[in-house]
Length: 124
Image (cartoon, rainbow, N blue to C red; front, side):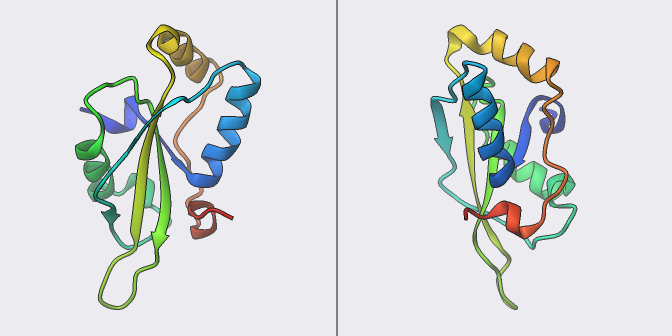
């Protein structure tokens, strides 16, 4: 599975922004699957392209590929002995609107987050 091509990975702040845009366009990300085990990895500006991070996301992704949006949220800052802890939540629209949703994402060039500052990974 090529996670980078078929899954859009967003920081929490980018997700909130996208959710507002989608609501205005008539889409509702009404299906959610939260990962039970958090992803543990040290934060870096390249977090979203880190092979270890992408592998952990791919392993935790639901089998239903309509979960096209993954939201990463920093839940616990690491320290000297432990890496940061992130929760990952996958989001999807209903099956009837999945093709339309995919078209919207493509047409509006919705892509994974590129700015991965710690502030964008936390809820305000």
